[in-house]
View 1: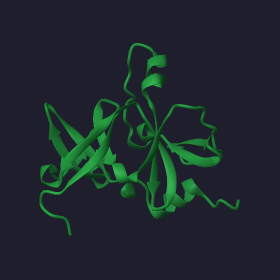
View 2: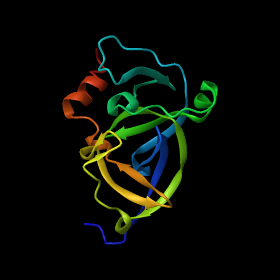
View 3: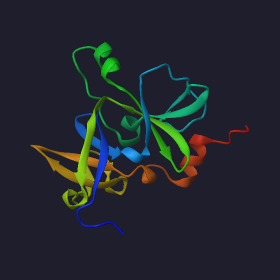
View 4: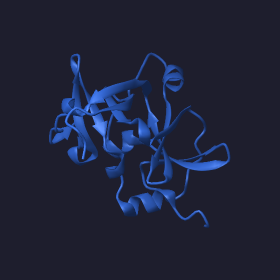
Length: 162
């Protein structure tokens, strides 16, 4: 399907102490932190919903989903300034994920991607597309289509007619 050295772009962000990336083609937008309205009986990792330009978007807390400690700076206010939500498009459904800090967009060659280790900072390898060595650390590439099972996605998105 793809050539050995195909290049694509990743939107990178910090979650806890690790650097993650998602394919730029799956990112609709990046927005600043705003008030999230809780949803009764939602899965534990669903923070709630936001109203973004008259569109209701569920917000997922990957810290809770993957049991990752939040990255802390000297004050909570700084976290809010640096953090935000990445709005993803998963098979036509918009879902927001909470991030600690947006990094940058980076080009990656497919030849640089290595298979993920069995367990990486609490996130199971089934959610990871691969890892790329960068300087003295790794960039973990998330497979957003595997973050949620079809049943979980249905529970998060719900029926818009309800």
